[in-house]
Figure 1: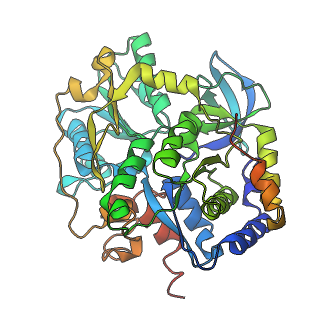
Figure 2: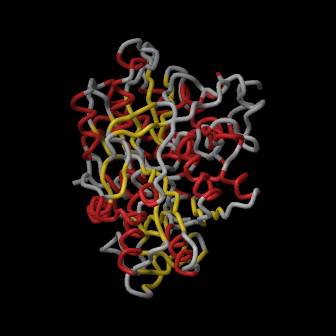
Figure 3: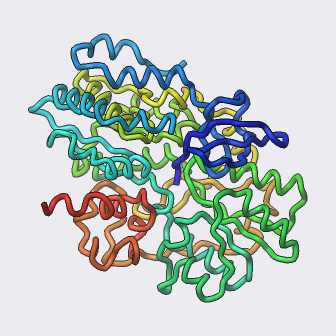
Length: 84
Length: 375
């Protein structure tokens, strides 16, 4: 129910709406809840509304954290604190 | 698909699984609750349980809005569709939840009620616009992820003067349910549900942020790690929880930083608070009455409140006696502990709500895990 999917913003249409690309499917969604997205950004879409812009840098950091081996644990727990 | 495929990478999964095995102390038992049904689904679908050592156990939580909706609430919707002749719009999962009198919204539809499945609340408003002579009710359910769109649509109906539209509001809130679990006798008194930490919801937290969970870490000394819904997110969150337990820490950590901030989506929160307010109490299936755990329309929007508009009260209805959904939702029982699991109760013919939605604990176990144990 609370599942939402990443979609790429392709073009802004009527005020507050945008066409997004969800894995190849183009769909118009409301951007009323997200202020800072621009074309090319990825947003999380749920029931026809973009809920949040995906932060690309944070995504890279998370992927890098997955790859860290246990030996780096001490360092690892210091680094990825909470988001500001 | 970007932001999906790379978070399902098998080799990275092996690395995280190895870290979990290495860091989980052999002489300790770890029990973590994934609150959200999205995580329950991911854990079952990707076989994450199989990648965990035997002393790390995941307990399914009540974070599936379809599962926690009590029969009496579905009855209200069916009543509106059957007796008041409204066009009743709702999300797909809600249609199949068993209600009183061997009915569901789907069966009511088969008997002639005008029940329509929608993808977005915008669809419900469009139906109201297209059928000005009909009354249209949006049967709204869901946690905080789904609430802001409902709030926006109510405002939009007001702005456009769409007077044949109203909302049967059953939105529930996450922190109240977590508090309820932490204060339940199974957790506090009997210890029958050992809880060493929580995986916090992904998309709920996009809206509410990580801030509301800080209370649980501080007051109840329970670690919380907010995680995305992809399998690697869930595994990394389990590893982070193990590290907190090992280090004697109880903090809120955020694995899902690509979408969740501490404050959450403030614009979405403001929309919700403009239109909706907390109910004093709300009945949850499995949990019973939970104080301040659900939302209703503010008096300023009363004309769009289906409960007020049609004067329908709430009547409590007991669950099917054979159904263990209540215990499953509290983490006291596993789906396979229920006598009717997989026999009388299947996803095709659900007896209890946990078998309806794909993120319900029973449906997830039926689809992905039920044959595993017999092998």
